[in-house]
Length: 115
Image (cartoon, rainbow, N blue to C red; front, side, top):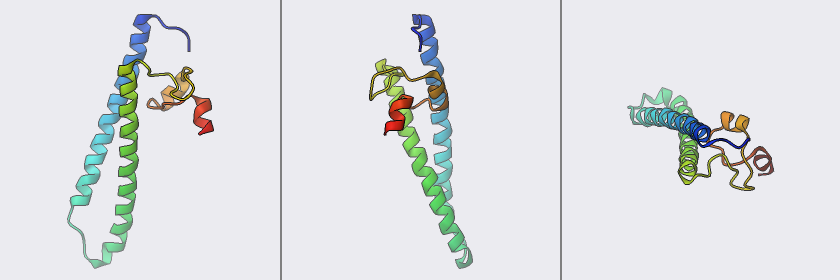
């Protein structure tokens, strides 16, 4: 990553803050829908096996969503701390392509592969 001027650096940070905030809102909406599905009345005995499988899928989606929310909050915290875009393991800049793909990543490509 090239050295950026203060105004382009601010634009860079604001771009990722907006992406992270948008993704956080999407996940929160999805998690509320999953909670609502768990609160719905259950069907007769014939459908219980199917419902049990559906509940397992919903639970896994909910857990994955919660983990991603935590990662997003950590990325937002790094923005506030002024360390966003820097690998937390080795301290090198995280590539733009990697941040585009996974804006909440705390690791550069090399460190992510070594974990």
